[in-house]
Length: 443
Image (cartoon, rainbow, N blue to C red; front, top):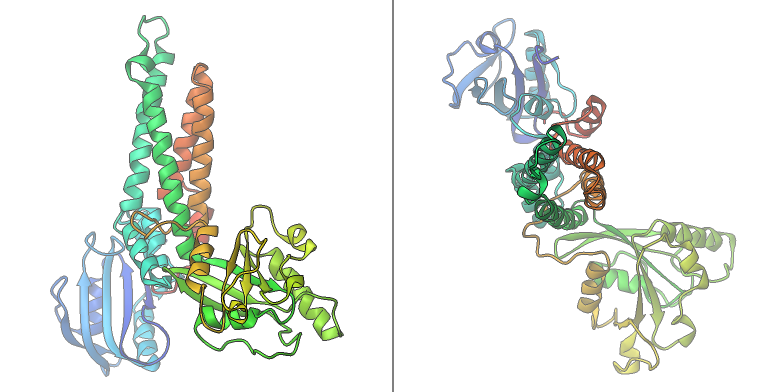
């Protein structure tokens, strides 16, 4: 309940120069007085002694007091900055619990910020995305959402839909008046404008989803075509064992590489052929399983072996619908850089010399839908994409049903509801629980 005082260690586990205990709740002045015995000016760091129940000093550090409503959670918030040892932090936290606080649940501070209108839901989620950002590009996109850029775009479309709904309701409420409110309000043009804005936002959000989650890229092909060498070349490290012996790779080897800020989860797999033993059979089974779960497959062939150029007939059957495949011809250094004739849509590379690797990286990004430098991209979550897609479907239906006013009004209402769920204007309590349970404790 919001009336309860919550506390948590807000810095990562382990040892550090500084550790922080964060406290939030109503009327924290008395708790602070018991803890430090010193007056603290609001929003001003003050050097203090942190005092135990028996009057002994737990630690020395800084105390900051942020009175409601001008705080992260919208409630009174205290931050205790002490020495960053786990024992010290636990002693400070235990003292807060003695004074009436309870341990915060994961994400509870940010959840209270949302419930107290300090952040909308999209901004609250961007807090976790900023903490989890794996690249500088992802961090910049998360900051854009945290500062409200994504929410403002959603709100602008929602306001446009409200205006459209008002025109429809006026037409339905006053059918006897000789006034066409929809025509007078230029409803068709306004609907088309919202649909275009929504499509632009959906495209930008799909780009952001790539930054946030990355894509699973499986390297597949016959044995000894250089899959492991190519994996090492792309990653810039010797991750996979490379030998001339067919079947060296028996298990899936994984590494995440960042290309233009996009995380690509590369998976090197066992070569596809009739297995020579039970271990290789298991490895090939793992390969097919990875292919079935891939977002992108690189079929690797050997430029000196024509029998490896054509992908396995089972590949198309195992790939999920819509998953792209890139054909790559490796070992071009052995053919003096000359690609074999008669091959279309093949990228030629040399894992040994690095020739063609930049072209391959660009092709991978293009295949998974990346086409932006990051400007205007939002670090969207799956639920954001689903809501935007739902809104788009309802707006398409509204466009088709513009002459049937009741149906037109209903589709506009459903589209508005889908958009509003992104920022949390209409959001079920169980969804809030799922969202904030994935945050770290202390945030």
